[in-house]
Amino acid sequence: SSSGLENQIFQYIDLHQNEFIQTLKEWVAVESDSIQPERRQNVTQMVELTADRLRAMGATVELVKLCSHKPDVQSLLLPPLILAELGKDPQKPTVCFYGHVDVQPAKKEDGWKTDPYNLTEIDGNLYGRGATDNKGPVLAWINAVESFRALKLDTPVNHKFIIEGMEEAGSLGLEEIIKENQRFFSDVDYIVISDNLWLSNRKPALTYGTRGNICFSVEVQCGERDLHSGSFGGIIHEPMTDLIALLDSLVDTSGRILIPGVYDDVASLTEEEKKLYEAIEFDLEEYKNNTGVKKFLYDTKEEILSHLWRYPSLSIHGIEGAFHEPGIKTAIPAKVIGKFSIRQVPHMDISIVKRQVIKYLEDVFSKRNSPNKLKVSVPISAMPWVADINDPLYTAARTAIKTVFGQDPEMIRDGATIPIAQMLQNITRKSVMMLPIGAADDGEHSQKEKISRYNYIQGTKLFATLFLEIAKLHGQLQEASNTTTAN
Ligand SMILES: NCCCC(=O)N[C@@H](Cc1c[nH]cn1)C(=O)O
Ligand SMILES: [Zn+2]
Ligand SMILES: [Zn+2]
Image 1 (spheres, rainbow, N blue to C red):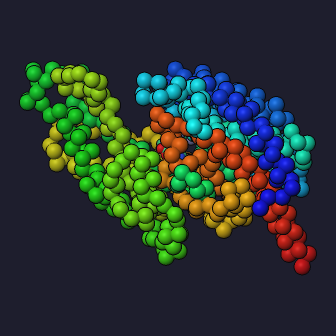
Image 2: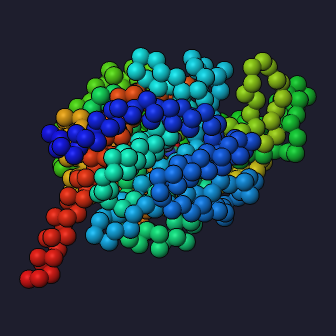
Image 3: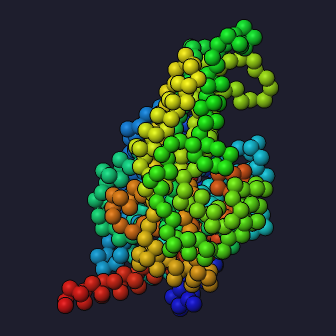
């Protein structure tokens, strides 16, 4: 149950909810799509808007220029990264929040019922691109910090912020910046990321792991230009046919990856882990309804969760150079590039998997006796992340969730990849936690992305309560360590 102080803050948040929604509406209106290079100016504008919001709250903001060492034609136009801080009391713990203010592309004609850049409330849901991924959660955190200030309450923790504008494009340049700014993290005690969803539409969750990802490009080229299939079809080895055979050799109908050795380093399932999965309330029908898919590869909760969270998977994403528009075009493309990725898990090693995949594709290709040129590359990769759920940060979050939502959270992992989670854990050696506020049916990246008014506002309360819980816990931890030192 909540304390008098919490009730005062909750009341403030409830009273100001329409203002919080109005700010979210202003943020959603900025088309900060980081995928399409022509929208990069909007991403920079969004980063500046965020910086202004933080400054208005009294934070010191540094805009760090991103300079990617990876090949990106648009690298000169990369938006800056925000490193900000508010409060420097050495008696208080310092919590660093990570979020991103760029979004996935969205067009009304993709099938949106509402204008994706005009936050629209329907039946308690706030529809719009970025509403849940990730503008809503970033603002919820800011609203929570702001609520203490507005009520003239002493802030329980010092705050640091790392906010980026290139997450949806693979967090270009981020790792270099974090390494170059290690001093910024030197006094950080806890790191919180809120960039994923609950497992259910109604039950809150706390996330302690994500899969990594290795993205592959497979290029097959026969000549310099496309050819007429009437004039050349039947007398040449077509690149597209080679590529389809290569892509088809990667995974079988049961979802098993066919690359030899790929499963060798996958951690074995422990009894403790099995118990964690068994304890989770998981509504398979609700999950299917959220996705619109009628049948999954697996039927039980344990199989589904373990194959999403702790086993690797391989997905084929697309083919560059192939004709994909409506109508018929009778050409033979000269060069095609297949894109697929492997979500990898502990203890798979990125460089070993890369070697295994390249060798396998070269073997399959050589059996085809094709004179075409094959090139395999890895444009981006990210490590998986797993945290210790017994860490005090998780204890604080569980208590805060119980206070705000009246129930214990599901302890979950996420099948997707948040590259910064492992990066921050490795570089700073501090506790990292993912604390989602969006529900499973929020439709990240889809044509009906939303966050509910309830989740946005309760999420704001959750973050405010977390600050208080971390402060309490930190006090206890400090006391305990002082006693130990005195002894
Ligand atoms: N629920 C949070 C999802 C975040 C996300 O979608 N991350 C991307 C990052 C990525 C991985 N490989 C290339 N980009 C994802 O696809 O997991
Ligand atoms: Zn996101
Ligand atoms: Zn996203």
